[in-house]
Image (cartoon, rainbow over all chains, first blue to last red; front, side, top):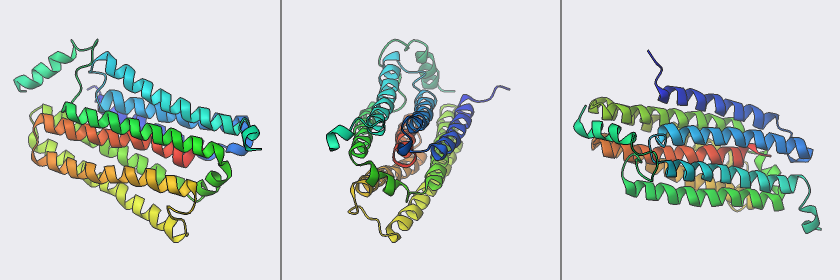
Length: 100
Length: 194
């Protein structure tokens, strides 16, 4: 018997949540510049993948029109990208000029 | 399986190129899209505020319990899974099973609120309030506004477990998955990224 796709999504969400916690705990934080950005990027990738799983399988966008999938997955990507952008700009020291 | 269910499933195969085929009531989706827009802007705003004052945000974040927050993620995605199974049962005409699953999901959802209360009481008793600094202001605002949606979502799940037409089940589930989706973005941004 094939495993229900909803159950697979649940398993994926649990695994990604634990991964995010491990990566988030291991990441050295903003004092460590490039490594900090890598940690933040890792956490945001798990967030994007979790959001995608919820959108496609729980909110059933896999069955909806393609337009909805494009809009909502772009939204997820945009939030993650802007957050990583803001984090990186500060972390890599670009804002030091503004602060001084 | 009812005719509507068959039509609904049949329609799915013809709806791949346009803006149709969303589960539940369209009004709910208008709400979902506006909620996602508001939380999206707020979360990006949080990270921009952090960029201008990283020391305050680091100090604040150090007081948050990342494990409790992570536990709450597991709670919400599990509740979302149960609701999704409920919708599936409803579509098969298994109304009693659908209602039971929705009630179970609202029970699991309320665990989220219990953990959130534990987190708030620890934070408040450590002397941090919404007025403490920018970090705690945004933390209480974002998590509080989200928790309010959890409260409303639990109520909605219970309401549609009683009036359990397929459309009602889908509409309640859609709201609940949106609450889940927002937490999946909020938790890493507010708790994890340092």
